[in-house]
Length: 165
Image 1 (cartoon, rainbow, N blue to C red):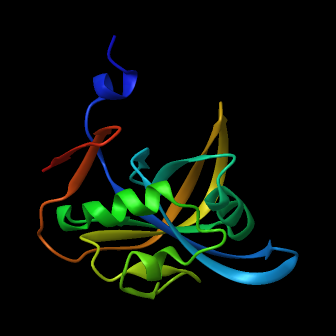
Image 2: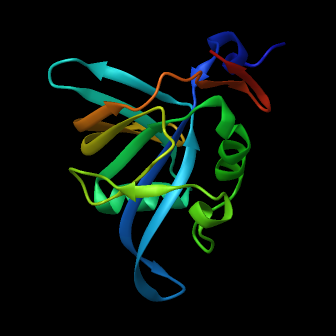
């Protein structure tokens, strides 16, 4: 039997960036993080809403829950290796931006980093959270967006299966 993810088809790969003040090893610190997310989708034109699904046990979940902010960075196919890395490592004790050699800049409308090499980005403020089994669907109001380049984007099917469209 095929997994339901293969049946669902290819989904756009995004690197989600977030920042929050959190306790790491008993010390309060501001932490930037990046993680891979292919469970993402537009929800509304007016107001502009976009959703990402994040596992409740993930460090990234704690950051978004705390800050109520995130940036959806749609990535070119050339960042596949970086996407796999950011999706398989926890940012709680390492700097995934540094380890994956991702170039960043400050977002314009929220207190968060975004990726310089993103094909497009959506800066979002959380307006709703929906419990969905072992994940939470964070609904973000898009406060800034831009398309940076006309490059082929990376799509995820399942496991290590990707597509370039």
